[in-house]
Amino acid sequence: MKALLIFPLLFSIVTLSQAQTKSFYDFKVKDIDGKEVSMADFKGKKVLVVNVASECGNTPQYETLEKLYQKYGTEKFVVVGFPANNFGSQEPGSNEDIKTFCSTKYQVTFPMMSKISVKGKNIDPLYIWLTTKKENGVMDAPVTWNFQKFMINEDGTLHGMVKPGVDPDCAEIVSWIEK
Image (cartoon, rainbow, N blue to C red; front, side, top):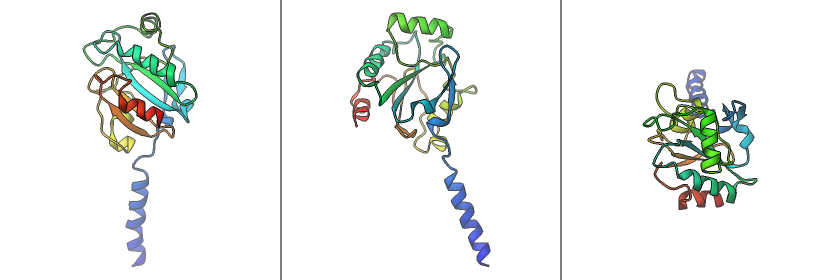
């Protein structure tokens, strides 16, 4: 009889422990040049993940993102840009076009990844994790537009999200970086 009572308890414990089994560090992506990058390379840093686009009203946020990266991006902080063409076809170029645009127009030096999908049927696995509470253990946060910002803590957990129209140097992001 005891065994019948213990089995459901053990099953529940195992199921709960598997609820959020991945961290940010479990993902690999390709950079803007097509080389594989492990998110584990950013262990110990706060990471601001941003889906970016070159032809959006929010595109000038590149300048503020670069300033944040220059100010805080030493040992403890990094911005990682993910170009995406999911909203109004505002990122139509190739990875090479995007790289040229970012480096010449906004002097971007923070890591840029290859163009991906951040929503829909072709959503990148990293963005499934970022946007789904069942995956990240924190919140559901579907991407609503270009320049949505996800804050990842030094331990690879999702801290929170800042909406696309909010400037990257807002109090919420700056206080998180400085904390």
